Amino acid sequence: MKGRIFSGVQPTGNLHLGNYLGAIKNWADLQKDFECIYCVVDLHAVTVQRTPEELKSDTFEVVAGLIASGIDPEKSILFNQSQVTHHSELAWIFNCTAKLGWLNRMTQFKEKAGKNRENASVGLYVYPTLMAADILAYKATHVPVGEDQKQHLELTRDIALAFNSSYELDFFPLPEPQIFGSASRVMSLRNGLSKMSKSDVSEYSRINLKDTATEIGLKLKKAKSDSNPIPFSKEELKDRPEASNLIGIYAALSKKSEKEVLNEFGGKGFGVFKPALADLAVSVLEPINTELVKLLDDKSYLKMILNNGSEKAKDISSKVLSDVYKIMGFIR
Ligand code: TYM
Image 1 (cartoon, helix red, strand yellow):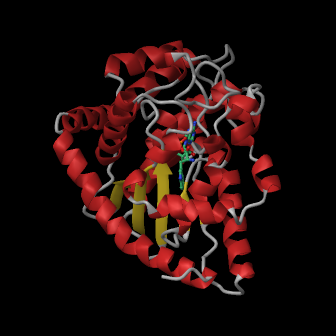
Image 2: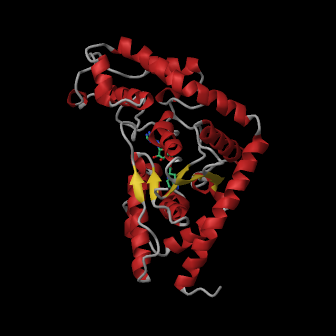
Image 3: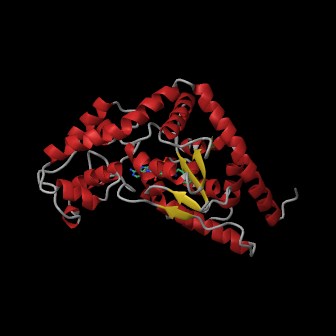
């Protein structure tokens, strides 16, 4: 094994193509070479208000989506964050390690809190210290994520370093971000300058893993593009965000490089490219959708996976937390 992976996804709404291509597809591939721990971060999801029904159904949907996308609960530890209380305990310690100035720099907080910052929850502000605790409670060495999580991972490394140097120990590893390829930042289908996200009000901005073949086809048909033909080189895509996004999606779905995709479609218009992209997207996503819907029919199976995964996770995190408390001088 090349190291220990930890990564997480929030149960807030449907998983979309950005989550799949930027993170989850890679998580599945990494299972053969790494010891993998994958977490549905339900505590992170309540930094904004959720009803109990939403939290429950989104948690089931995300677990089903992960398994349908190839996360094997026999090979990897798959669980939900709130069942392993060590995450919250270590987050408190890290709240006492991280500096206000470090958190003030986090762009995700600024984006999510928006203009009404005074009304944002304290949880949203300290979200990154809980994320650092998720990773470091397992002394994970690698963290596969989309581009948008890069800053949070830098903070995680700063927290690990600060803890190590406070106690003059080499206790926490400095986890490496793993950010892969042409789909590490999938953009909205309606606006090539904003990220594909669960919170976008327009359903046409994203493809969900729960979408049917017809919905995928329609969304890609309506996807914003431009009237120029597809170019032959990546340089010519520079000022064409929508075109660049669609080419990146095609490359990631087909496991080809962007260069290869441009060689295949260079000179053709979007009238030719979009139906080809829709066929490709359906061929990759339809089997996932079928499996996801089937799994959602058996909630007790999904619950059992989360309960078993949580027990396995605790076996690792309890040892790390016990060492942390001892290092800090707490009487145990
Ligand atoms: P979340 O739930 O927003 O997203 C889950 C994963 O999907 C990636 N992603 C994207 N990748 C490419 N293009 C997009 N448009 C796109 N949108 C989302 C994210 O980068 C992420 O990898 N804070 C994290 C969850 C988390 C976590 C952790 C991750 C909590 N603790 C510990 C890693 C390690 C988040 O909100 O992801």
